Length: 75
Image (cartoon, rainbow, N blue to C red):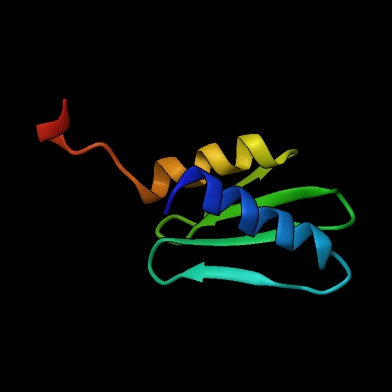
């Protein structure tokens, strides 16, 4: 998934802020937008770690990194 597609998905979550929408990639992450805190919450399902992101740019960068990990052969 490209960074542009991720930003579009995050923008959609903000548009539907009155609804609870959770994007889940099984075994990897859960993503929600919290209207109360006006932030994205990214939960890694392996360890339950919750990370808040206050804007689309920082949230999209974090998601991109998780979805597109650097492989050892790329180093």
